[in-house]
Amino acid sequence: LSIQKQLVERFLKQIKGEKDLISLLEVCSVLRNFNQDILSYIIGKEITIAFNQLLKYSFCKPIEIGKFKLHDTFRSFLEKDFKSRAPYKWKNYHLKAIEFHEIKIKQEPAHHKSWQNLTLEKYYHSLYVNEKNTLDLFKIEFGNYSGSMLKKYCLPIFDLFERFLKEEKNI
Image (cartoon, rainbow, N blue to C red; front, top):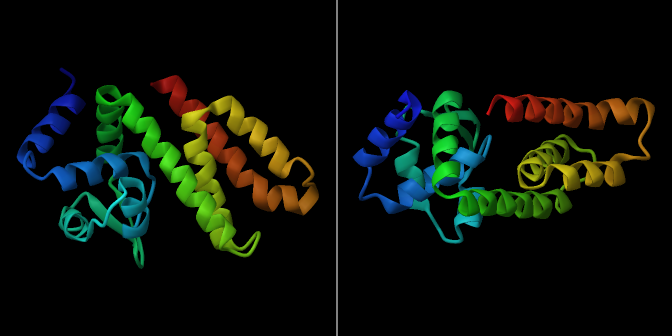
């Protein structure tokens, strides 16, 4: 067993009876950042108690008011383990994240900072579900952008694509 796998197994063994917390960690492993709303949406139920438990762990870091992330290395270990144990569930969580972000995008003014962040997260999850379709969707959504519009709204997504491709080669 790899050290990564051993660490994940040891941690999960410690919280074995905490099914809601384990479910939250699985969801968090596919999300770059999260709040209670997205976790509840993906899991499909209210998760206040488990969410409050999660926030007590040192690997769960606040990044702004009401928004959190798992420590990058811990998240990477968890996600690799989760994907190997439950690939269908892993993919389904990405699909649910896409749905969530699409709903939120429609609630934001176009090209506002929050719209940009939500769009970036939607593309992040889309890449993991279907890389080719994501690139096609990007061309449809942003194909007519040019100049400053292209630079402002598309470069962060291009950077995301580049990081994704590098990550995929390392796996």
